[in-house]
Amino acid sequence: MAAILPFSGSNTNKKVLERYLDIPQPSETVQVEYVWIDEDRVGLKSKCKTMDFEPKNLKDCPVWYFDGSNTGQGVGCVADMYLNPVAVFSDPFRSGQNKLCLCDFYHYDNTPAERNDRHTCYDAMEKTKSDKPWFSIEQEYILLDHDGHPYGWPKNGFPGPQGPYYCGVGANKVYGRDIVEAHYRACLYAGIKIAGCNAEVMPGQWEYQVGPCEGIEMGDHLWIARYIMDRVAEDFGVIVTLDPKPITGNWNGSGAHCNYSTLAMREKDGLRHIEEAITKLEKRHMTHIKGYDHTEGADNSRRLTGGANIRIPRQVAADKQGYLEDRRPSSNCDPYRLTEFMVRTTVLDESD
Image (cartoon, rainbow, N blue to C red; front, side, top):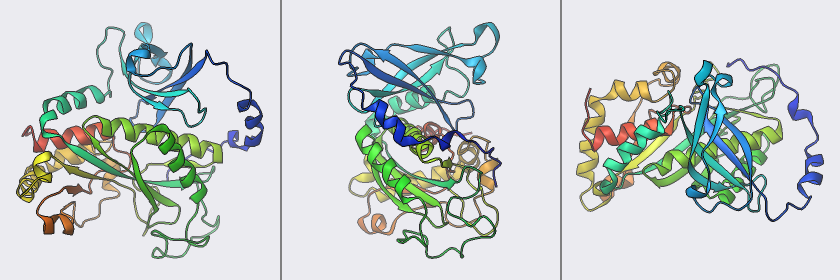
């Protein structure tokens, strides 16, 4: 099980906050929360900026900065890191005119920072724009109590074996539905293309789906959905882990299954293009495995235990057009890397 230090910040009375959020916000002020990916490409960072108008698009959001020496993303005299806005969403926590602003980050000389994968993903998506690549990612995750113990599990012992929990209903089958519902509604408010959610195979494990999204939009929407998930869980005093296999033994791991198609796959006789793409993916299997989690495949190796890695859904085979599902990506994958690898292998025909 992943080691997580206990914390006490969640013990505050959240009802008290409502008193302050009910204070009228001056019409000429807007809070914009700048959000960026952390140094490990798993979590997120954020800081808030007051603006004197509601930003309607990216051009309205100025470049900002943060001290990279405190995040492991910059050192010494060049620690200033610049935040370049890339997507704007409505803020479900402050509501009103307030916004969430997703950013990627650059060094002072405008060179991309290490582990900033969005800029290369954007390049790949621009090159394949005419192919209209669509993605939908099924984000699995596990809820943990503040002491790192699976949420809802008995403190001494284990719940019953897996079986009744998947898509379960009832207090003896699912744990944390209120957190899931809060996240879903917050994503809808923000403008995330969230497509659904369900309880997963392991008790305390859930999934939400984001998509279909075209091109770079997939990574943008999933990262903000993850930010909202962490913020919601923070309010409930619960931890969200994207570790692919936080619980050892006969308990399911967590993945981020990717449903993928190009325009040619979605049109008549698209099955031929799907099969050609799978052949290309097979040739670069290890490249994808190394890129599908932030530890060059080490995390994911604890989860992948065999079975089909890439599948063609039965309805797609019957229709002879549609999409393929790559089941290899880990729950903690960077969606920018995942989607970039898909188009570089299947459309741009890159090889190792």
